[in-house]
Amino acid sequence: MKRILAGFAALMVVLIMLQLAAQRWAGPWIETWRMAPRAPFLQLTPLSADAYQNSAMWLARPDQTDDPSRTLPPGMGHLHGAGAYVFVVHPTTFMGRTHWNAPLDHADSQMRARLALRSMASAFNDAAAIYAPRYRQAALGTFLIDAPESAAALAAAEGDVRSAFATFVGAIPPDASIILVGSGQGALITLHLLRDVVRTTPLSARVAAVYLAGWPVSPAHDLPQTGLPACTAPGQSRCVMAWMSFARPADPARVLKMAWHYPALDGRVPDDRPLCTNPLTGGGAAAASPAPANLGSLAIGDERRGAELITPGVAAQCDGASGLLLISQPPHLGDQVMPGNDYTMFDFALFWRNLRIDMARRTRAWQQERAHR
Image 1 (cartoon, rainbow, N blue to C red):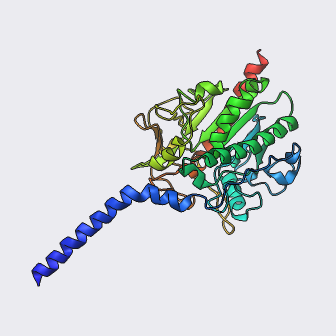
Image 2 (cartoon, one colour):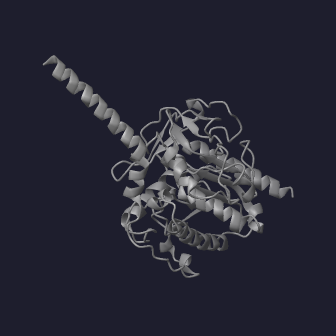
Image 3 (tube, helix red, strand yellow):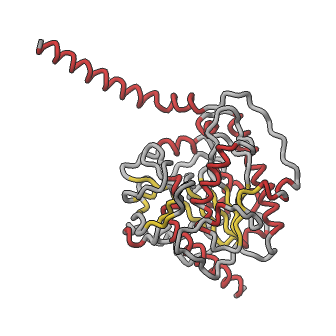
């Protein structure tokens, strides 16, 4: 009997090991199959030239009464002197397989987009105004497959954002400073916006800072095409902050795999580590920043619980080997933690109060530089 039990136990161990090995080998293929769009690809008709004159086409705009970017935790007021105008492109929030691009009336993805703006855009609501467009974002599954349809879906999403950006530029004062903010898919689109729309125009001189999170930015293949350097000091203007937050042990394979489907801005496949600029140091130090340096993380709450500032926030350090921003054990900010200890959905919320100060400081630096030209 003991031999039978021992044999059965050994068999179970072997089966478990085989199952784990199969999951490791087939896991990415299974995820791709599970998330890939099932519907035929439909080429979207470009929006009308005046589409973004309609307030309903924006998730955040100064004239809206129910603007998620205005979220503030109790006791938090506004800083003075942050007179920039902020353009925000939210991350992927459409997880469905029924479309390659999210319909603008898809309720769940719009709800998730509003939550994303509460988490990320609210860090910048000391600015003069925040604009965040609704757009026909590429579905999450399109980032998992190499297909012409995936590139076409992203191009359609970019077309919407470019149209929204043109309306944004026309709506703000002609000499005002601009802050660009993007997360995930929104960061990728913002990179393309910098290369194709901003860099070769007078708009480039008006960019006070760029904040890109949740998407790998190549120092060698992306940054030169934007016309802006990486931020290396907290008082620096006209530079790029970029980071991807992971807790230990970090496994960025999923997010990097999604990025590898798309070439860098120079058309090449990146062969360098992603840019990492620590929001706690303004990009100015490689050493770890302890938790007390983090002035507060934002828990955005839900229908029953309002936003809450959690202090101190997490410690953080840019890892030279991986290019990731490695964080200490974070508080519970929400349920959107991804496999591999991926906290990129909270890239802005984790450093919420520091980013408010960072934006104000870079905006003032831009204003002072402009005054002396």
